[in-house]
Length: 85
Image (cartoon, rainbow, N blue to C red; front, side, top):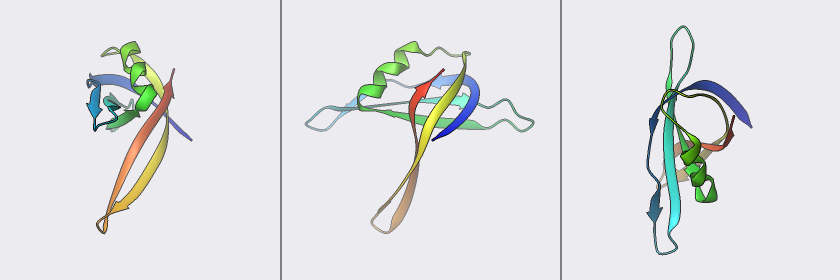
């Protein structure tokens, strides 16, 4: 479990995928550091409803898990948000 703070700079839309209509969404924050970083987070399944509580410019603390996987001998990482304050 990891946590980072920043200001919301972009909010995606909820997208339904596949036959089972699995939902995904994403948002981007910009950290408040000497060298600010723009970081994208993913929301999956029932967590996508949380996107309705975000607005551009809002400062939040993002709680997330770092996920990694291999597919066809390539490696992928994602930051999966599970809550924000």
